[in-house]
Structures are given as structure tokens and as C-alpha cells.
Length: 483
Image (tube, rainbow, N blue to C red; front, side, top):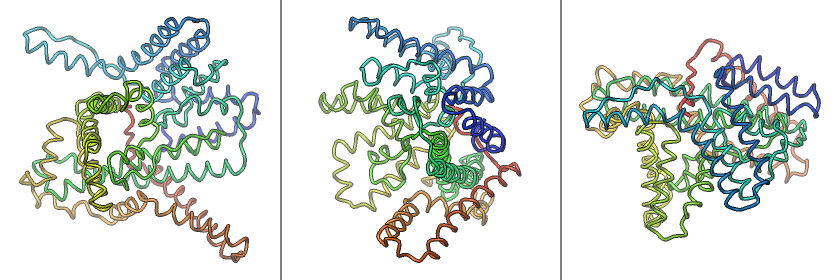
């Protein structure tokens, strides 16, 4: 089940919210756990048992850890728990990838390949596994108390708003909220607004631009002209941002309706002036996870320049692999890692001297080029697509002219994407709020009423148009199946 579906919007979510508030505070956690498991089993069926095992194993770890008084015993227990969590992720996500690459090697040696049937990848396993690992490690380092109720830990691991697309949540950030939550009318209203904005990002912007991106990527790269190739990857650049950030907005919105406050996951990454800044703005929860649970434990930047660069490369190698079991994802991660290394050894100083405009152009070129490896299904396809982008392909402008992809609806949503990927609207909202405060209630009531009514109608329009698009069966891709 996905948020951008009529079943979720008009069946699951209303029933969940109604039940959640009717049962009262005492039973809200069991109800929320039940609905989270139903949500997951809706699409994954029996693989919900995998999640239940994950909950039980990590709960048992938390309860048993205090009995290991000696440091080496506690460390061994922590390593075992982390290994079980990551072992599960490695098997389901990387078994086929590992065997396929191993077969390529042994076939060159004249040996028979290993026959392994396709292993199903449970949706969201990368997210809830990383959350479980952070819980285990933080308990060992005594950064958070153990959860004493299995339902509490079950909610942390399976909480459906952020289960399939993040943000990745730290247990310590919501431990008190799991125990007790206060839900105000203001919070609930904010949650609705945030959910609608996210729904519009996903359904109206991301889905519409995905049509163009997918159409372009279906064409043989040798037939693409440079303008069409650039249009396709730029549409994908907007698609993945509005899809991913839209899901994060919806997750934050639903969480607020249920009484949870999740941290922000995106902060307008396409306005960045360096790749370092980009990763402070893009998928913030994942960046912070790799920083705190891999980069810093490896030594971070505390063990000399060479070790720092090696740590960065390792982190982004694994970051790429986390996104999918493919060498294309690894290359995507290493591209970002390479430019981060270059910025650390001197490029950042040049970017500052060159000015903000040059920095913006530099970031967009790096990010858009790297997205080719993220989007293309194979490495040869990615390389051929890059050749088309930079004019090393003959192309076929008569068969696939640029105007073929520039229809009115597409142009409209493209322009919306450009403006919505900048903090323009939040800045306007901030200026309006400051004006209201500074006026001490002296702003004309009619003006305030018109502005507030306009905002309300705008949100209603987003919801209605999103619903219409879903009702008529418009293109609604789900890009998180690899995570």
C-alpha cells in the first residue's frame, strides 16, 4: 500500500485515524502497531513475519543487554545484534547481486555457476533495518534507555508513516513520544496541510514529470539528441526529488496527526552551492545515519587527511549500495564521494572565490550527471545516455524532436517544479507571518481573511486534483521497491 492511492486516502487512513482517536490514549499504541502491520502486510503478505522477527530480536537484545556486566560481553552482544539485522538486509537485498557477480568470476575460471532463485526484496527493509541498528548501537553506548514494552519497540520499527520511504528515525528522538503523545488541533491541522502538500508533490509534479523521463529513457541512446537527453534527465531530477520529498512530507504530516514529530528530511537540496551542502540538504536522515554510525566510528576526520578521504569513499560506496543492488548505484555514490573529496582538498575554496552562481551550476551539473547512473538500468545504458547528453551521439531529431515532449501540461508542471524546488513560497509565508506579528492585529481583517481563504482553497485544489489524477488511473510509479 502506498500513500498516493485511493485505498490509502479513503479507506486505510480514515479508518486508522478514527480507531486511533476512539480507543483513547491507553490503547493507541497497540492500535497503531496493528495498523502498521496491516499496512505492511497489505503489499508484502507473509514478509510481515520478517518484521515481527526483527521487532522480537531487537526487543530481546534491549532487555538482555543490562545482564551483560562485562564490557566485552556487552560488545559481543551488540555485534551479534547488529550482525543479525544487517545479515537479514544483506540476504534479501544483495544475495542475487552477490551470486551473479561471483558467477561471472567463476565462469571465467571454467567452473559451473551457482544457481540461486530470485530472492524477494521486502519493501522498506533498508529503512527499518537501519532504524533497528541505530537502536542497538545507541543502547550499547547508553545514549538511550531500552524500550520495556514490545509494542513500543514494534511501533518504532514498523511505524507505517515512515516505513517505506523514511525519514530514518532515531529511537531517542521519539522514545518519549512513543510513551506519551499530546495531539492538539493545531498539530492535526498542520499534519493535514503537510500531507496534502506532499501528496501534490508526488501525484501532480513527480508523476507527471516521470512520464517524460520514462519516455526518454525508453529510447535507444543512439537515437537521442542532446536537448532531448537533457530534458529526460532533468525531468528525472525533479521526479526523484518531488517523489522522495513528497513522501517525506506525507510521512511527517501523518506522524503529526498521530502525535509524532519527525525531523525534516529534505531542505531544498537543488539550491546548494557545493556537494557538501547538497548532502546536508538531501535525505538528511540517511546522511546523518551514515555520519554517526559509520563515518565517525571509522575515525571521521580525526586520523589524518588520507584516512579521512578513505572514510568518505567507503561511506559513499556503501551509501550507493544501500540504494540498490547494482554497480550503477555504487558508481552514483562514488561520484558524490569523489566530489566531496575534491572539495575537502581545495575545490571548496575555489567555489567560494568563483561565486554562488558558479557554485549552483557546478552542483546541478554534478547531481544531474550522477542521476543518470541512478536512473539507467545498466552501466552500458548509462554511459551511452551520457554520450548523448554531451553530444557524442548522432541522435535522430526527426524521429524524436524536442517538441514531441514539450506539451502544455508537461511545461506547466516543469515550471511548477522549478519554483517548488526553491524556498520561494516558504519565504513569502515567512514574510506574511512576520507582517501579521509586527502589525499587532492592525492588518485589515478582510485582507487576512482573503489570504487565509486563498491558502485553504489552494490546499483543497491540490487534494482534489491529486485525487482526480489517481481516480482516472494516471501514471503513478513506485520508485522505492529497491529500498
